[in-house]
Image 1 (tube, each protein chain N blue to C red):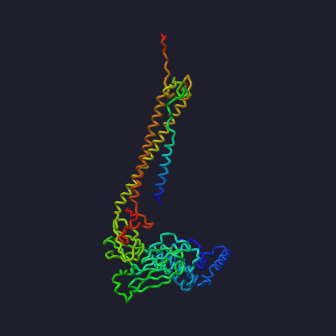
Image 2: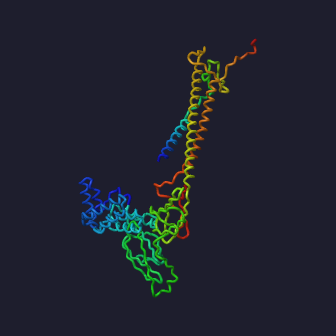
Image 3: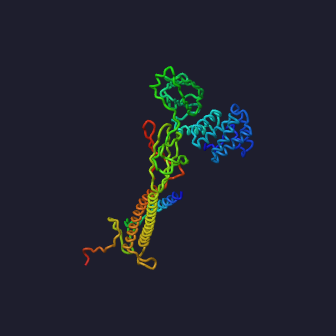
Length: 430
Length: 65
C-alpha cells in the first residue's frame, strides 16, 4: 500500500493514533470523538496497548522493507483484535510487496469488510485490484461506483450453470460483471455433478471471486465422461532456453534452467546474466497451468558501448559544427554592421570630402561588406542545419547504445496467451 | 541524469544561437528611393527607374561644341 505510507487513515486503528501523536492535541480529541461516534459498530472497543504496539511495529517494519517481520507483528495484532481493519490492510500491502497475491486479495477483502467506511477505502480497493490483476485474474473493465459490486465465478467444471438470486447468469467461467453489493445466494449446477449452493457477500467497489468445486454425482457418472474436467491449477511454468546464463526470478537466483520453472500465476521479473553481454531483464506474465517460453535476446556489451561512444563522438562533432555556425554568424553580423555604417556615413557626407573625420568608403567597399555578410550568413545557416542533423544522428546512436535502465520496471517479454493468442507489448532491444 | 542535463544544455545553446541568426537584421539594402540614399558626396544619384545609385553623368547636349 504505497500511498498509505504518506496519507492519513481515518480507521479506528492504532495506526491512526500513532500518526497523530505529533499533531495538535485538540484536533486529535475532536477527531477521536467523531471517529468513535461514526465507527462505533466497527470499533466499539479501544484496542489494547498490546495491539497498538504490535500494529505499530508491523507498520514500521513494513515501511523499512522488513516484510517478514512486519507480517509477524501484524498477524499478532490481527489475532489480538480480529475486528481491526488496519492490520489486514497492511497485511495485504505486505503480501503485495512479497508477491503473494492470493493472501493480498484475501487480506484486502477482510479489511474492506471490517471497515466499509474507511477513508483508506479507495487505496485498499486499488490494492485488491492490483493483486487480482497480478494473480492473473480477469479485471473488471469499467469503473465500479460506490455501491456497485462485481462478481466472477469459476469452477472446476467448465460450463456449469450459475444462478444468482434465482436468476441465470450463464455458464462458468463467468467474467467479472456488475451486481448489487450485499449478500448473494449462488446456485451452481451441471448435469453429472452435485449442485452447489453458496452464500457470499459481494463487497462494494471490488470484484468478488467465487471459486466453486463441484463434486461428481455418483448417480449420474455416465455424464462425467462427456464433461471436460478442469484440473485445479495453481502454478504456471517459465521455460528458459538451456545455458542462458545466471537466472534470477523476482530477485531469487534459480540454479537450473533445464526444466520448466514452476511459478505462481502473475507477473514476475526475469533476469538473465551472460558473460560479455548486458543483463536481460523482462517482465513475464505467468498464467496458471500454462508454460510460458521466453527467448532472451542478448546484447553484446562491447558492441553496445562502441555504438554509444560513436554517438558521443558524432554528437560532439555536431556541437563543433554548431559552434562554427555561430562563429560564421558573428562574422556575418560584423560585415552587416560595416555595410550599415558605410551607408550611414557616406549618404550623409557632404562636399568637399573631408577624410579626417571618417575614411572614405566607396560603393565597392559597401557592396563588398554586403556580400561578406550574405555569404557568412549562408555559411552559418548551412552549418546550423548540418549541426542539427549531426547531433540528431549522435543522439540516435547514444539512444541505441545506452544501457538498459534498471531503475524502472523492465518491458514485458512477448509471451503466448491462453487460447492461442499473442500478447505483443513494447519489446525493446538495446 | 547527467546525460539529460548535457543534452538539454546543448539543445538550449543551439536553439539560442539559431534564434540569434534567424532574428538578425542582415546587411542593409543597396536599393534607393531618393538621392538621400546614395553617396552624394561621391557624385552618386538615385536612378528612380532602376532604384539603384549611379554616378551622375554630364548630359552632353546636341548644341555643345
